Image 1 (tube, rainbow, N blue to C red):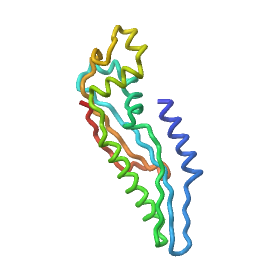
Image 2 (cartoon, helix red, strand yellow):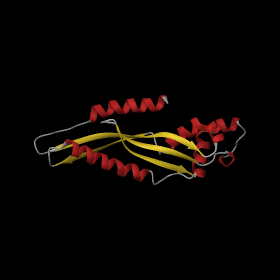
Image 3 (cartoon, rainbow, N blue to C red):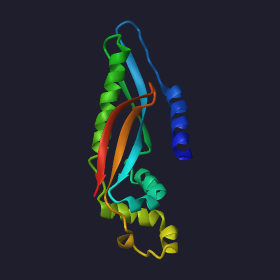
Image 4 (cartoon, rainbow, N blue to C red):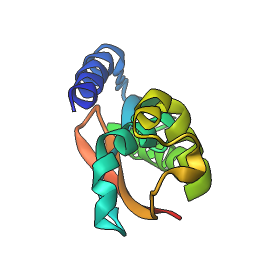
Length: 159
């Protein structure tokens, strides 16, 4: 949780430093920062909650959530709102593209095991195939950090 707040705080400071809007009569531009965060996890088997903290970290590790990026747009009118809208549309495309590469439960378990080898070894689990993890759902959100609002939510199923 501290990591997420650290990321958000860093992103907000970065966003404040790089946001640029120019309104010279018939030209506007915007540079917006975005973050992709997980909202919640829903396990198909309640016993999987025992792995919750490492599963949440692994979701970031595989690149589904926990990343920040920027988009910029320029328009030939004085509408900064339209430039921000275009930034949001570009961010949605990047977000949607990233969510097309959802890991399978097997590949997720491999990454979970490799990221937490010592933990699983202490439990007597010596391979990813031995992890008793079942399918689960992640609620993923795209946020415009510059203007602090949610743009899109998606439900991702890891099976």
